[in-house]
Image 1: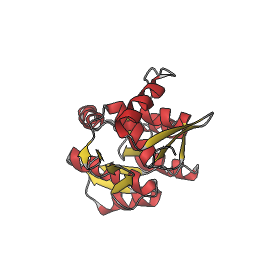
Image 2 (image 1 turned 180 degrees about the vertical axis):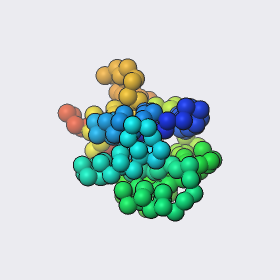
Image 3 (image 1 turned 60 degrees about the vertical axis):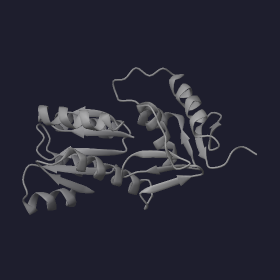
Image 4 (image 1 turned 90 degrees about the vertical axis):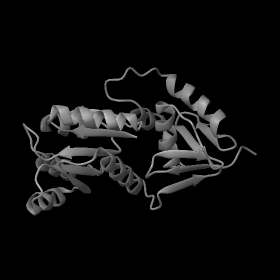
Length: 222
């Protein structure tokens, strides 16, 4: 899953980025509202962490402009004040959730996973696909009831596929959700990751749809 973090506090942003990447999220960072607005308009994200007190363009304005342009991406707002008026302004602008600073990064991770799950149309925290199960609250995979060991990139690919199981995930969307904005992307790297995953998740299978992308199936090919 790919996130946008819009936060101008350098030490806090570094702490959040480190924690999110440790949980296998791909994360782009914007330190001001202008950059955040531009990234939200031009890139594809599964969710956004948006500080309300951004310089150049405040968070409420950024969010209001995204919604006015039809951008429906899930947004969790951060505010340094526990005032009700700030929360109301954020929710009126189109926020989906909020946290008040200071907060535990672990709670931020749990809330983000819940946001992404709801946005993908999933109500339950556990998603099952044949022998695979994914706990979106914990961010963990199991195969036949046993923990499935994955690299960070493998986790990003498999989580994107299982959130849309039995549906085609376009190649471009998968690449956008796996790699951060400034990463060098080898056109064959996703193919390599898919090949490794196929060995790890059998008898569930990842089908290549020529010219389109990939689809995760619960059952092996007949």
